[in-house]
Amino acid sequence: MQNELLADCVQDMVDYVLDMLRLPLKSNLSNNIEILKDLEQMPENIKHGCNQRLSGFLLQEGVEDFSPFKGGKQRLLKALKALCLDFFESLNIKWIGYVVIGRQYSYDHIARVLSIPVDATFSVDQYFGLFHEIGHVIIRNKEYFKASPLPEHLIELFDHKGGLSREIFCDLFDYQCGFLGYYSLYEKTVPHYLAELMKKKDITIDIVEKYVLRFLCVTIYQNNYMQNHASKTKLVNLTKKILNKFLKESGAEQQFENEKEDLVSRLVYSANEMNDVLLVFNKLYTQKLSVFCQKRIETFSSNKFKAQFKQIMNGQIVHDLDHPQLVVLAMLKKKQTQEIPFKAHVAAIQSFLNCYNTNNWDGTYFPYKRFVAKQSE
Image 1 (spheres, one colour):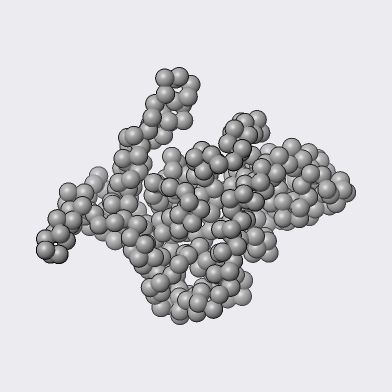
Image 2 (tube, rainbow, N blue to C red; image 1 turned 90 degrees about the vertical axis):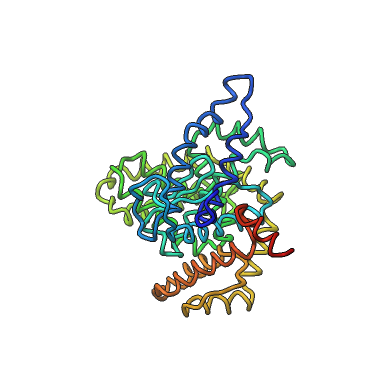
């Protein structure tokens, strides 16, 4: 930060470092477990983030720690961060994290730092994976739930139901707030992604149940099957349909041909067990998220956004883009009928960067403050 040439590359990480150093340790040791875990991950997070921001656009790791040369990847990382910050600010959530590329082979979150796979970074339509990870950050933000009776209930619920309940909660956030409740678009996008994840694993009956259950719960939520409104027969038929879709897309039809009946029974039972998660999310949506979604839907349908998206598809940079998320959704929708040209991805990334700069999300980084003050005199 003391190097005027490089300061803007790492500026977006400063709040994260300062906030982590201020984490309050509590006298009761058992209450520090989550905080200590975050602190343990902090040095590697900082190193990884700095190396990426000081390297070029070739998506491999730099050979030196804290390279003295200014690369270009920080522009791409700020474009990705613009997508996330626009979400958080519109939901009145203070997020002091940042984005890295390729920390994991899938989308991930580590102590409020979000990671996107290498092969998704130049395909803006693939940025949808960050919607789910944003949900994970929100779950950890206890301040966000202060104004409602949800916090303790939420924590106890997730502790009781296990890690899969968090994934389902974030899938619901992904569907409702990321995809704005467009079920058809979600259905054509997310199950395919989950099936591809299954392919990369040694597929077991537990893996199948885990990934199918996640999409099944979103579908149950979308169809308002909560509180046992649906008959068992209707739920079983829906489960069979979704299970067959996943087995076909993951190439595991033959492997589980003789276990389908058992899988359907397990999935119906697990879906009923997760009913409370759906109800809690629905309460959160009604109290805090519905206005956000409605405003985004209106903007998505506006003539202004349609004109901006047409510009991006033609490879033209937009200078007054409001919500990068909507470009991701529009690309996913357009992708159903035609290929997205590379020039459109590049124009979108630059438009996201313009959004980042227009919102002044970094502020004036301090090496230049004295210079700017002198010029104004």
